[in-house]
Image 1 (cartoon, helix red, strand yellow):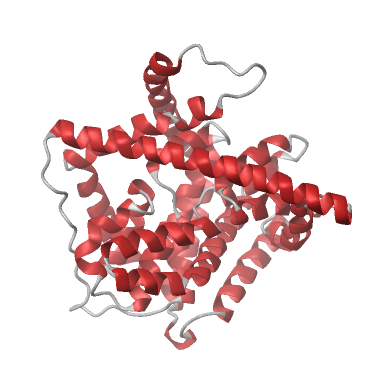
Image 2 (tube, rainbow, N blue to C red):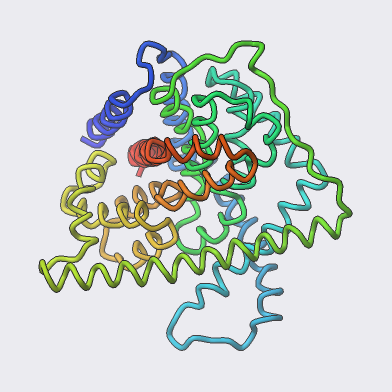
Length: 392
């Protein structure tokens, strides 16, 4: 039964994506088949084998160590601040982003990350049939983040046609930046975070190949990565530390606003209709939760969490997921994989703003296809969760 539901889920995702495709005649089915097989194999390895357990354990232990080191700096500044019977979310979850950001800066400065990103991207371009720029951008988005990644390809932003620009933006929304992966791991099981990161990378190519199919000629298939402006080591380090702190503060501000607004809306809906806004959304998203592999009796509950992520962000949804302790382990796993991406309404503004800061005209183009961007990124999350559900 599980396999039949998974097949149904994949067919639903493909059908909904195909229905809004820009050009159905240009869809190439062979790369799609290869990519979906790779997704299934990777999900099996990560979730059902000792090799996957070892890899995820190693990845999680690295971040566990990094968070321990980050705690040294946080405790030096904020030690002694305690909320009785409350989790100090900003201090224990968000502030370590500052340290992780500093490490990413060091790896960038020493040319280690650019080398890894470029050559993994080149290998992926052979598999997915897309251009080198698109493949580079997908890997870079998963490490640098949805705003910073466009800086590395800013030389080409202004020359890209609309369809290629869409794919770059879709990759940025479908993945998450490495600087906040540690924060996710304190909120949901690390194995689901790692699984989602890997599956979303390939899922982004699958959905983009259906929703926005095109071919890149040899003349167009050029990758020009922008070299960062020459800085001293400590200039760079200070910049990345401040960038990390800005991310932590922005996430904190968004959480304050969204959690409070959702509480207000729930109160209004409960008072007028006798049902909360999240439960109402849960009924709308329940069919998607079901085709992802969630048992029907938990589909409304899971759907409400999925909807919370879309209308607010993944942090708010992960906090909400933590409250639903009665849900089965299978449902928690599937929903967790779904939550690990930037597919929400606020990301439209973030990505459009990042592109506009580099090229105003192209930023306006991104804003115009913003809803389609969110639609595609959500399909990526549904696909990843569906494939993961096969092995949970």
